[in-house]
Amino acid sequence: MILHSHSIGSGEPLVLIHGLFGSYENLAGIARALSDQWQIISIDLPNHGQSAHSDQMSYSNMVADLAETLDSLDITQCALLGHSLGGKLAMAFALTYPKRVSQLIIADIAPVRYERSHQAVFAGLNAVTLATISNRSDADKQMAVHIKEPGVRQFLLKSLHKTEQGFHWRFNLGVLSKCYDELLGAPAAKDKYAGPVLFIKGAESDYILPEHRPQIMQLFPAAEAKIINGTGHWLHAEKPVAFAKLVRDFLLSQHTKK
Image 1 (tube, one colour):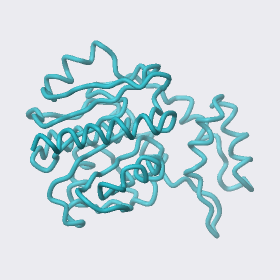
Image 2 (tube, rainbow, N blue to C red; image 1 turned 45 degrees about the horizontal axis):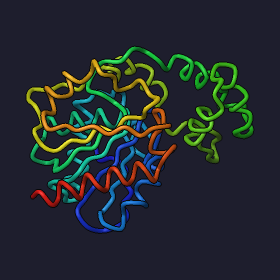
Image 3 (cartoon, rainbow, N blue to C red; image 1 turned 90 degrees about the vertical axis):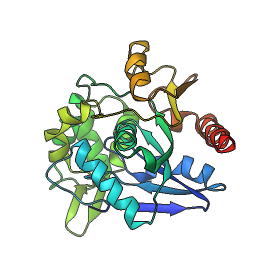
């Protein structure tokens, strides 16, 4: 399946992959910041944004979808940047097709299995009566019973779309719920990815922990890490200038080593 993509800038290709419940627009700021030196291809994950829906969502299938998408764009090799779930897909792709990835940047996620942590989000989304709401404020009020953080609700509401038939979620809520446990898992790896890798951690986030280091180094022996102080899991949105500088410096430093 060819995924929906959006491209800006010119130069060597850098592919951006967003996280769970998001869309390519989540990384629009970093795309604009880096489009002066790279061709930025932002994709919508399967069952997200403007990409097609399907009845499953495994890492192996998403890797195949990403490969098909890059083929359709005539991209044989690129740098990959993924946040959260997008980071897991980026890692899985690099481990499957190492020669197709020149550099790998992973934002606040590790190649490990995580515990369930989105129960309130699923409850809030399922509480929205799409057939009867009149506007986003109605949806926000219904979600607020389960999702207390206004910022989380505003993020989710970006995917609430209105057509002549009424409101619907751009993401495939039923399949995301069904495949959630699979998405929490670690990306499968038959071998390691020996190319250059940068992990960027939000200092206040617990998605990357010291105990994850052995698994990271086993799969990505050339990995290095940077921490952005004063940020949580949404580090690229909380401190976009600092995030963009880390990405730019890493890409350029690796380019000079070639």
